[in-house]
Structure formats: C-alpha cells, structure tokens
Image (cartoon, rainbow, N blue to C red; front, side, top):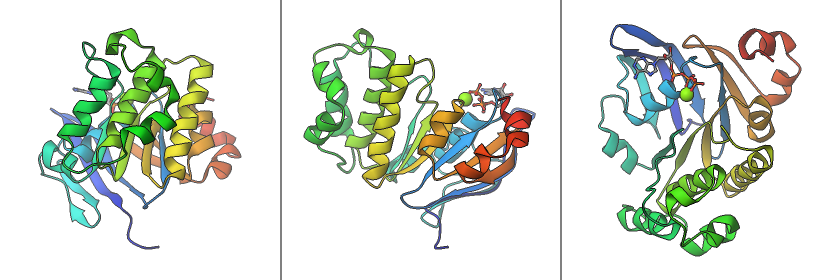
Amino acid sequence: MSEPLLALENVNSYYGESHILKSVSLHVGEGETVALLGRNGAGKTTTLKSIVGWVQPQSGSVTFAGEELAGKEMMEIARKGIALVPEERRIFTNLTVAENLRIAQVTARKPGWSLDRVYERFPRLRERLANKGDEISGGEKQMLAIARALVQHTRVLLLDEPTEGLAPLIVREVEAVIREIKAAGMTILLVEQNLYSALGVADRCYILDQGEVVYAGVPDDLRGNEDVMRRYLHV
Ligand SMILES: Nc1ncnc2c1ncn2[C@@H]1O[C@H](COP(=O)(O)OP(=O)(O)OP(=O)(O)O)[C@@H](O)[C@H]1O
Ligand SMILES: [Mg+2]
C-alpha cells in the first residue's frame, strides 16, 4: 500500500486524568471513505479532535501526507486542508445560507469548490440562500456545514455523525451528498452511530470500544460478523 494520507499511530489522548484514547492506530488513504463506529462514549469524537489539534494527544503520532501533526495548533492543521464538521455543526445562525458560504469562501486560504458547483450538488441549499442559519432544518444545517468545508481547500473531510437527529428521508439525502463528494474524489473519515448509513458509503471501517480499536475491516465483512456487531455496536 502507498503511504496513507492520514494516519494515527498509537495515539493516547486524555481529558485531565481520564485516559480516553488508548493506543489508537488507524489510517485513511487518499480518496478513501473510512467509517469510525462505536457506541456512545467510545471515543469517536475524541479521535477526530485529536486529529485536528482540538485535543492534543499525549503520545503517539498523527501524520498527514507524511507530516507530523501532533503538537501543532488547530489553525495550522486546518490550513493544511483538514476540515472537521462537528456534531453541533456550528454555522452562523444569524447569517443567511449565502452569507455563511461567502464567509467560508473569503476566509479560505485556498479555494475549493465554486459556489456554482456547491449549488449544483446541494439544490436544497440553493433554495434556502436567503434564509438565516436558524431558519433552516437540521438536514439543511448539516449540508451547509459540509458545503462550507468544500468551498475551502479541503483534502480530508472529517464528519462527526452527519445524520444524527435527522428524519429518515433527510438521512438519505445526506448520504447521497456524502456519496457524491466521495465520487468527486474527496478523502473522508466518517464518524457514525448509524451503522447502515456508514456501511452503505464506507470503503473500510473501524470500531472503537472504550477508546480502543477493536475491529478493522470492510463493510461486507462487518455485515457478516454478527458477533462483533452485537458485542460492540448493540445491533
Ligand atoms: N471535554 C471532556 N472532558 C472530559 N471528558 C470528556 C470530554 N469529552 C468527552 N469526554 C469523555 O470521553 C469519552 C469519549 O467521548 P467521545 O465524545 O469521544 O465519545 P463518542 O464516541 O464521540 O460518543 P458519542 O457517540 O456519544 O458522540 C466519554 O467517556 C466522554 O464522557
Ligand atoms: Mg461523539
């Protein structure tokens, strides 16, 4: 295998005295979509935070295109093209959809997708351009948060539970968006509680349990592995 674009090697992360990530190793190849699964509190969000420098790993390494990220500032890591779309989505609720996107565009160090391309892929957003961030649905907020990452130069998209709290129909739409972004060649690390949503889009998956990687495999293997699913995912 050629060198992965993003790789975690024996990462240990703490909140105060609590040892949360225990020697986590995983990798994401260029153009791959990798799902990170696990129950509530397993350490999924902490893994994403440890990649972007929101949490500083106490030991281990996080490399991006072969370069060490551990110890670097969040801003510096973001500038390299690693975009985290957090669970809470964090869009500007007092600004319109169009303004949210324009801000992302003008603050980008390097441009990513054009607004035309974004509107083509997110027709729902085009219809809501004049609506404020607090006047759109949860699914539309999620799409806006993803679109905002795309108008900036993004090389790896980290998505934290993009389908959480959404109605089934909207979940399908968000899945379709992720599939299109993937088809456009984006590298994606996808955190999901929605197992079937993740299996439908991922090339490979990892399962975290109590801060440890307990499984790595391809979706078809995991689907057939009832023991692992029951033990670590409660399905
Ligand atoms: N800021 C924090 N300070 C202290 N402990 C935290 C903090 N954030 C998370 N934790 C703890 O770290 C562990 C891992 O949390 P994390 O948010 O990474 O889990 P998760 O897999 O993303 O869960 P969920 O599916 O509920 O989002 C949990 O035990 C959680 O209570
Ligand atoms: Mg989480």
